[in-house]
Image (tube, rainbow, N blue to C red):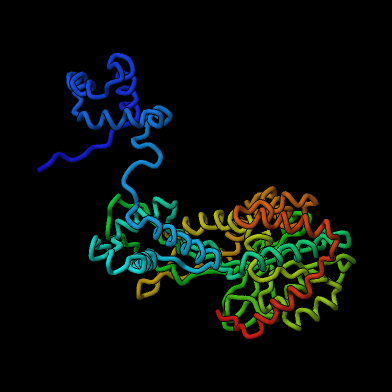
Length: 443
């Protein structure tokens, strides 16, 4: 059985080239006998190859094992270039690309690239194995990535909506009373970590994560901050068969709903609590996303009665221009997750006869939410608000610093400012509303 080939570090090749150039008199074949005495088991042909490539080898870093462009050439050649182009085209269209798609497409391209005569003269059996797909992805700097958000907008539409919304804020900021401008959104807090990851032994093929029985438990919290960076009391949506008005409990407001989510009736009560008539003033705004309940007719009417102007974040933009998604939620959820985990590991959890854990009492949950919200740093809140359009320097906005959309947004923003066009988002929002007409909110 022939000996297994081993790669050799560039630094060793460089030593050999230096010896050949000096003591070896420029004759690479002399190096074999010399270095055999030092224990090197390298053939003369290798020394000759290194000597031919000496300029490239001497220019490389010593820790590498192969010069740039070295190694076996890819089997498909030009066909591989066509395949990588197809991969990029699908990702530009935000379409999913799987390893199986790469394999099947590679086979199709390979078969289409060869004539019957070529196949008869030089038969090549190409099956696009798992190892080939792995190496293809490594050669072309590709890897499997987890989806980061659910937007299906094209890059152009997303950037256009972002520019229009930010221009809307810029035009209305002089009229805003920042103490009476509220940025609000709802977020779900789950009692069991939904992430499918755990620490385990390298190479483990069977990784099971047992449910702790808390998977069905969750609460919904409405978090609100002012444009000046002040945190307002959080509002918990508590699931109960009978609906009730908002109550004050342990530093939080609590709303009782048959479903633990937001509807227009709840929002009407929320607006009455957070925009009381006795504090009504000019410059009142509410900034929230385009969820159906937020833009319902009754909510719009109540906002009009209270002289509250709405700034609705267009669909697909919440990860980039909504303060909660930019930074506030992560800090809040990190804080409350620790409290939930402490409770789950304590003897305060009660169980049913069937052995299932009972949900905690509302008073305990209220204390968690109040404590986690208090621990959310004011600096995080202020920076998140500023990054979502309330800083006068557009280069500090989150969307402007985004690794994918940042450069395109800045170019579009500068063009819009230079042209002096108005930032009316009516047309943009009308398109958003049309897509929301048939949406049904389910618990």
